[in-house]
Image 1 (cartoon, rainbow, N blue to C red):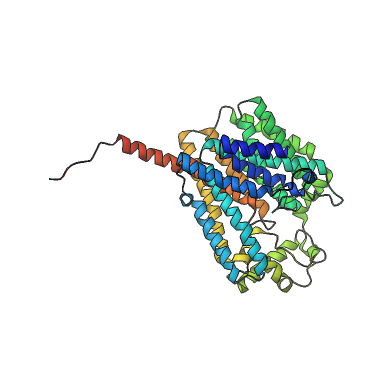
Image 2: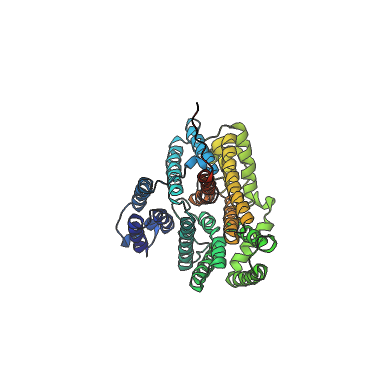
Length: 445
């Protein structure tokens, strides 16, 4: 399956559509062949390097042949993303772990480059759908892998993560937004074959999330689906029989979820509301994170310019109270927001927040445009994207994911949507106005 997708994707990128190169990159991210049981059965190659070269080549081919005009800085989220990258690089001068920060800069810069290349390649509505499907396919594979592997002695699924999300919580956050993506495409698909494929993907992803047992991912999924269903019920933008269909889908979804949930999952989710701060002082629990977050604020106050990658781990022994139970020597802050605050200071967290706000703003502008046009399907595509981003932001609030691949894919999708649905329409309107306006050429005597 991997070789078919990888080789087939290469050929399609070169001879059919260059945008497919990004889909190959997405699928490769989830396949992560070097860490799979079947990795020894395929050639020992740097697959990520070759697909990156493919994306670069395809981007230049598109520009040379089609003269695509989608400037990077025209998309609001990208301005703040590049600004944050600059600040992160400047943290080299204050980094407490210079070598580790240098490695983080290298990986983050590669991520920003591939995100920028993808923005150049995804310039139509059809290609944006492909990008969503590529993400959905990869999420399905991870869920299928979770079903194959099963839980270990601790009640979690370990060892199925990706390069930047190796642990169970990280990979659960990576696939959490995919559930609302599958739900949307199941709803709008015109054929039963497509509906069946998206239903299968959704069931596997839901089952995978239950097996992995991540509380943060569960909260993210719940929030995203509730948000989407609220729009279906209460938005004035409606399809025929939409509310009735929403009720049916809600009942089916809850029934399927109840069937998939087991006692281990239910017991772990119940600990979300029963976390005890007093218990955290005796043994490390989810509530321990509250003490970490308070410590991160103190670190930021003493080091307002930031302390580089893994700065909190460096200062944690000094700032975490000695009577708080902490397992291990190096401890992460368990929150993307406090991770950014301690690594890049108050300037970094401001730029990162503006990047996310501009992404949500771009989505909202697209929603307003489609609502005015009465374009129901695309309106809810943007609702889906907004819900998916919210799902990841909630899940990331309980783990360190500031430079996560999926986080920047969702930002990329918002920027692509803004370019496709807003900027291109503006250019078309201006061109049409110029073509229909009377000539103003005249000679001055």
